[in-house]
Image (cartoon, rainbow, N blue to C red):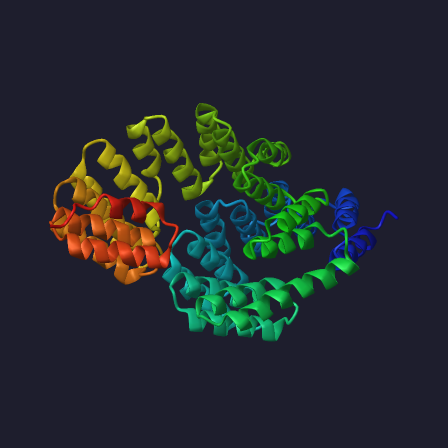
Length: 462
């Protein structure tokens, strides 16, 4: 019928029962009758977003803003789409614009906080997510995001409590069950963690019985199976998601798992499909770069990573670019690629340390290690170990031993770290102490070839 409201109602109904392609068609019919309705443009964008077609959704949110530049929901939705595409830094502009129009917009506060957390700015992100929950304590996804930020800050009990709130609001929130299991496992409660994982899988199975063509459900089941290291099942789930229109998320994850299974040629297929179907999303280019590099074509990978960076691929793309340039011996270019990386993660700093060391800039490399050590994030033990190796190469074995001891204080179950420390003490002539450390490494990992080799290299005692 030539009646906008009827088509709108039809689209809204289809949207509500997750028949998203039909919702898109109905919204398009309504817009053909009235292009001046910002809510319609926004809803059409939302339907595409829910189909995982994030890059395709943005022009419709922009059309909504052409009709009404003060429509804070559309500004926030552009930010959401950019976040889903991994373009977190770019998304902040849109969340800020939404909050400029409506400072107490809880969904924008949550979304901006989540973006900041993804950028490694965990404290800032947590503060905004908490503000959103003060305004709307019944939003389960905000509780999930709060748990993620708290987890990044190693505040595990608070993260668990936030997830409990999410599950009180939505007992079928499968991702929350999975994340709760992960946190409980880190807290040493393996039995309860297993129950959470099984509950999450049960939720997915029940949902898929009702909606077997729902690509998003297949995708999220794949995420859980991947977390549980059930890789073959995860590959099947991601493949099912990709054939059901789940979008770039499923294709990129599928490519990543195939690559981890040493199936680089197979991984390139979904990566190229992601690039073809979603050319404005950096994740397809990133996945293609990784697969291409694994196939022994690093120069081609550099071009793919560069494109991902241009699309807003963020630190992940810059780090991959730097690693590839490093493998080609283009060290100064690799350092330049890392210059755009900000945040509070140790990985880029340690990569920069390696590059500075390879260029003979030992003091710069040590400074990078110290910067990584100062970060209250995962990876501090690796930073101490990297510092120890640099100091040992410089002949500063006493300082190296102190760095390795600090690493062991953070992670005493790493057999290789005990081997590192043994080398530093051996360099000081402390063979008995080094031998004890190697014995401990072998108790932790009896098959550790490095520890066995170092023991056999020990100077004979007389």
